[in-house]
Image (cartoon, rainbow, N blue to C red; front, side):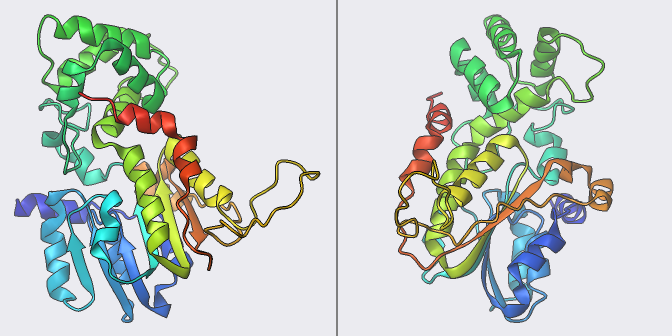
Length: 336
């Protein structure tokens, strides 16, 4: 365990760390919530500023050793909780200054063959980030062909989802699918070979299953809503996303619930847009990693960072956000 954890710590690269620091300004002090503790990269950097308090969360139990070391080093300024995004309001009595999300799978999770996230592994199909009710193995062997197709198509944006789902069902009718390699072989046989594409043929299906198994979209939506509820006026919410669905949700939330939300037409009467605005005027600025960071950490190449500033207005539940992305929430709610 100790060897694994030390390698976890060593290989952790917090994405766009400088941008996060420049936006959140920890030199001014305040209370931070690091919603994806992982290898502790963000929390460690933020704690270098003496007036900052950090509450960190992560659903993965394997990060506890690093978190415990930080709790010993900063007993008055750092506290770790093993919970999901959707539970962040349970650990706070007072409102906070900054909430930070770093979405998706971490490098140490992907690199651990026992977790079953990587299609290079020959271990059992798992894909659990922690605090899960189901595994990828459960999903693959129990979902209907129709639901499998929909999950792979929607969350993986995989054009050959129909053929992959059909072949999964055909294979499992003969033998239960338990190993990563079995699923890899099914996907590779289902897809047309296209040597012009650099992306591995399994990437999209594995992404889709991981999102479904961990209810990542449900956790993201509930998490950013609750994060907004616990922010002080003027507080900042920062989100680093890694695929288009995540980024669309974050962009929609920040832009449609800001004080400068655009009207459908210039002829539409202007209402009191500030009434339900949760955020100050949103600039729609997107930060992406610089070339040097991508060179050092290739997995950062698809990252996008957005942030919004909490307005002084009363918090009103943004029900339109859940309505807008209802198809994703309904898909993750499918029973296995």
